[in-house]
Length: 449
Image 1: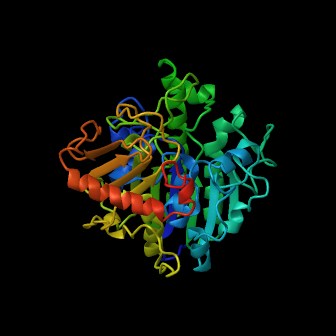
Image 2 (image 1 turned 135 degrees about the vertical axis):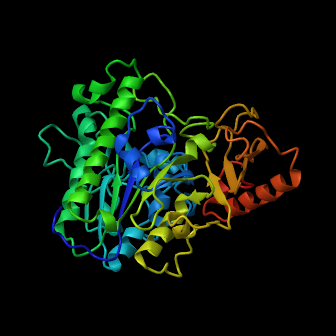
């Protein structure tokens, strides 16, 4: 073990995967996939089964991890794309630099801050970012290396052709997790006397996927698309394992809060390889606000704080809770001007009783408003969750569905007719929330929309 000293203030390492499904881990019940390193992380900490992100796609979900707000507060209704697409969606071209910023506040309070991997909150060129967006570093980071963002990438340091927009670069795709983990490890080594806050946001397993023959090795016996998908998941797990080993070697593991999660559910199964993610028994996938699109893995290891080998099935936690939680962990007060949409879930991390005391909200403007077929998955535009009950509705078609997700996790039995008062109350709350958002008049189904 290294002789490096470390700060008594906890380090925070937040690992966020891209399109990693609720069922894409051995410890979550997938008997085919191989994720030994993340399974070990769960064994050494706590695995939470009721963690929800704030959107079923990338950019809005990530917005909440930075701001502690629902993405609609900043009009981030979908992923950042071309100018015309952003304009059509009534979106800005990047996350407002004046928005609350978790890394900025951590930095101001003595933490070393870094962001490695995917950004996708503006910038990066190609079809996914505005060239004039702020550099990622301007949001409060001491060091960054990103894709789908402006600022340093790996362009100058890779031995193969490399572009800012990398989805067509198969060699890069096969190495992206390794590169981001290497950058994270090097940053942690640099100044062990100061606590660190690092966002490690992996590209994997977002399509397109290009695993090497070596990465395919353990899965050559499988047909496609399992072979490609499992190869990428397994390699990302292996790279995370290297980082966990580095924390041990540097002597900082015992003082580091490590969290693993995903930005949304897995991609829909299509012709191209890499669309084989699992949601187990949940309904829906990416692009819908049924649980399969927004309920994601959430693993926490914090030695001496988080219960070891525990599975938490009882506590609902939202992505908007992470900003106040991280600040609580670091002993930093939430600025009065921030008004986060979440609450600190520190009690849940300690294994103590935790109740949010407020509902979770979703707004998905890309919902299908062409009919009233409850059997399709992309009809809900608005969603609200109060503990076990979730109401989904579409103000254009008038369709509503209320589910008890304790007894009906697959969301198949609509209880609106059985509990009309509850459905009405929840509908009023989500409509009130939607009306409070900037740009409400542009929402489909709004009176002036």
